[in-house]
Length: 634
Image 1 (cartoon, rainbow, N blue to C red):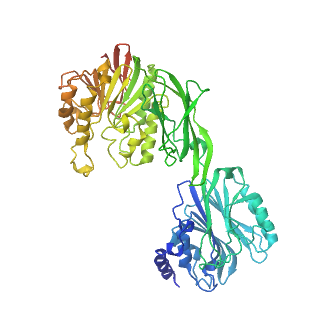
Image 2 (cartoon, helix red, strand yellow):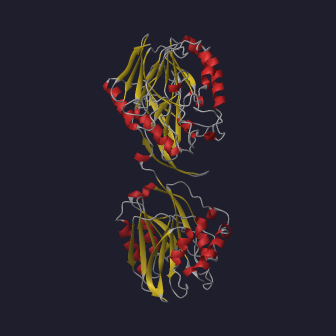
Image 3 (cartoon, rainbow, N blue to C red):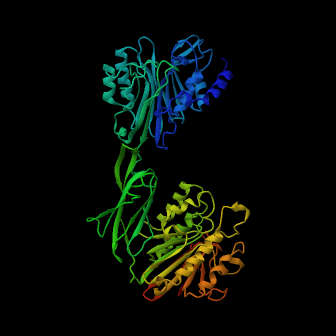
């Protein structure tokens, strides 16, 4: 058979790959998340079927493809021999499977070579080939080194004495590495043999020694193994599942496989520090993301000795299925300072009747102080339009520190997490902001701007915050001050072509009109002594503050807001600092606009500092270039 015909037959056979495998564990091709690994070992009998005569490369390839393994040991592999009709079999298997291949010939045979092979989805850092003893024929060991682990392929001698020497060599090589060391192959001995007992002394068998693999049509002996060297690093590996593929004809051996998961390093389990959300006079939400699914809880108290625990339950169950975590702590005392830390155990395996948890990892202690109805002093910091310019925020944070300003709460008033393209990007950018705002100890509010609305993960990003009951607008009290937050939506009409009909911000604005009607009549709003309105796109202004001169919310909301007594409107969007005094543009309150994402010039970045001290309310605006742009009492 020539190469083109071989590949053609493989392509046809691939469509029937799962038909060659029975239902059950063997047919599972999706073996888990990125930190899992599927290892497979298969003695392919030179590509022949169980009868030892009929070559059927495509069937063997279909078996391998059906298992979707990351690493495969192939034993008894020909290279350009007469019986393979001049084919380099390993290379053609690799090409059909889209994998890298590494060959280690052991003997010359029929004008070519005969030996063992390794298939790998990822290219290793290093490949080493080591000779092993073999009296009846030469034997070999292929070692592939990866950043996180070592994988070795082998095919042991039939002679017991050679097998014992081979295990000694294998053990010596494994001991050279401070990584998990896996080995797979046909070892030609049973678990009860002297060699089998020696292997089990130094290696953990990942395959089931009670499941025979040979001969394939009626298995009686387990001689094909996948094993893990017993070093310290092996403690970070968990066996998820294992099996023998029920394939009685494709070769004289049945393939074996093992799925393992690597525990996440303790210092990598948390994506970043936790951050505080949705703080009230009696509770707070602690949010954080992890690099693995975890069982998690929060320890908290008025000191770090006598603590309580809080965790999240959904209908009686912990939601151990995602990396986004939120724990609500309620029934707290207003005005009290509390300490807390987050604890987590990686969920390495979560099956119906079997679960494996990793070690407990704990964050440092953090603290927060709840506002109370009597709170009359606070400092709020407002950033806007950072547009991923971290240097601007860092500069502003340092300026605030130099001026002795420490926030009690922080707002990001739009376009600070712009255009999130996927969850990883959103998590990364949110945590950059949270670290910059010391959000593990200072509650924060991420207000949506028009750029947070854009890109594929814009709606998904809402789950990374917990203010306003899942809405992008709302109101809350901080002592005797009432904050009202609005969301204007996009800065262009809903039917603008770039939205493809996927937006309906008209309804969002109508919903907020109804919200305002209720809020402005509420007991909380009327009781408050001070009132702050915050939104990203300006409600009032001239054409300079609107990027497209589109602002339907003005006519919709202004009649309501004109009747309320707000002290100030803090806004953004225009990318330059401005002040619109009360009444200049029909605005019933002073409007202060924050700057842009620059270190200087017209678009200089700004940090607003709103400080309340008793009855006095002071607003300062600092530029990233070090200037004080505004300092006034409200």
